[in-house]
Length: 178
Image (cartoon, rainbow, N blue to C red):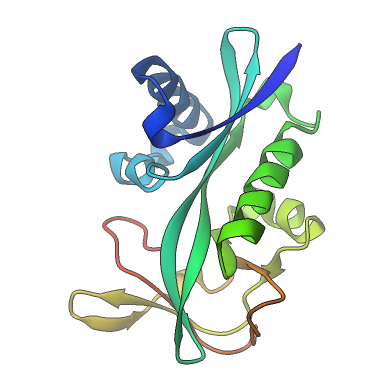
């Protein structure tokens, strides 16, 4: 039997955080860095448990994204994984439904950077692929992030008009900025 739990980082004990990091390391392999883990912290986590074993993780953290002359309060999705032998059972969709609820209730926009394997998953959930140029607000000024142009998705919300073909600028952070 599986159970979906929602909790803020501050409410997760060290064992749960260690299990989440271990799951991300397993699923992403060598692509998971300490900075990637740091990006997934400080917000709301959706965790799928099968008994005492963590089999799914996703989180949403607050970021600022510049669009159309505005700094939008953005719910940015991080660390979405389901253990390989438990995929195709709706766990990813259940976690995303909870994070999308949080985004719709507390943010002006949802955003994420998708892996190639997850593009269809997010599109089927109503996330829209960003068609314009992507940028990052770095310590040295605004810089292009053309390597991220095809993988950024947004979840537009009715209260803010979004032009998917315009420029999108994310706030700075160490590691992968998107």
